[in-house]
Length: 214
Image (cartoon, rainbow, N blue to C red; front, top):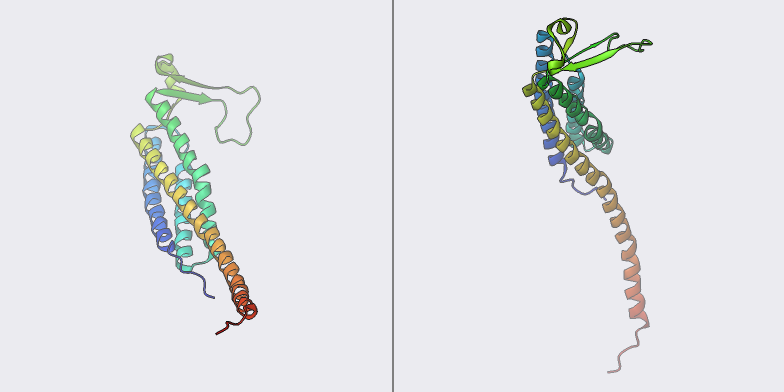
């Protein structure tokens, strides 16, 4: 018996295209934020938003292939990537951009004896952050400004929230498609098994029914 028609595939294809379009905008905005940060010599999590945007692009491509080929393996991969997007990648952008806005609006400066991306932290090292009036011009010369323009980070947060909602819808729809199809197949199998029993029961009932006296 052929599998039932999947009406959710067109919706999955539409969601996949939305993921790619939104991720491209996110990638451009994140690259612009990093460029501005390099120009004004500020410290931020360079490359984090770009990596997350690339993840969502790959996720959208897998969704397009899965909805076009109707392969359950790709649909499951699309579902798992959407789940990771909801609980990991979108929150990472939101948290990092929120810190950037917080530090930038309060004019925070920071300095460390070690590089923030170093593999190990030296013993007896020191790292400090000063904000507002707690820092003078002499200290600024030896410290780095934290954060980026809040308008760019606000855009990143907005796009990350939209990606989170899209990923949530993607995960729910893929879950319904994968496990709903299993439930439909199980229900059809039960109906097929019950039909002969029902037919035999009617035949048996007719066989034992006494003949009518005219």
